Length: 113
Length: 113
Image (cartoon, rainbow over all chains, first blue to last red; front, side, top):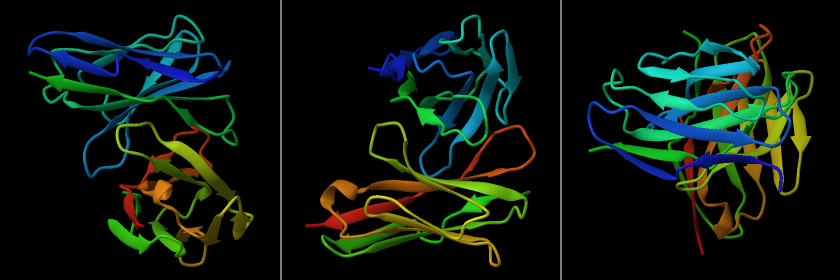
């Protein structure tokens, strides 16, 4: 099946720890995105990447880091510098042009203990 | 700054009724609009999109209307079913070339059997 997978579905982090959220797609999409979703709010962009080995900060990049070493993978690391990391994290991808649909993964719920 | 928002946070309807979910946008440069459906604990699913050179587009049981004069977007769902219960949110993109959509907060649609 083609699609976007995110793992794990649920993740618990102790304060001061870094954690990495996985996002993989087999759609051969060029662009990939990470969003954060909090209750009652719209999706906020953390980072995005339009091609391999290149990525740009979104609106709320502080405390997060990403890499794009392979076309199909765009992992997000939530660092200890992120003061309020408890949220639902969504990864998305699109083929390339703006006229192409953006597809979302199932999400990872991160909770800080 | 520019924003995309929804008029009603919650909409309750009876099964079989038609539902209308509204969205106001303020960026006059936006020329591509998308509606997503998000079920609890899952990633958003694409429903339908519309470009600014159109004022209406129909899908299966869904219709999107675009009124550029008043910067208003609506999603109509015909014969609403319990499975339609979810959060619906709109997104808009401008013509700036960065291909980054702006998302609204969402409307929760509750369908009563």
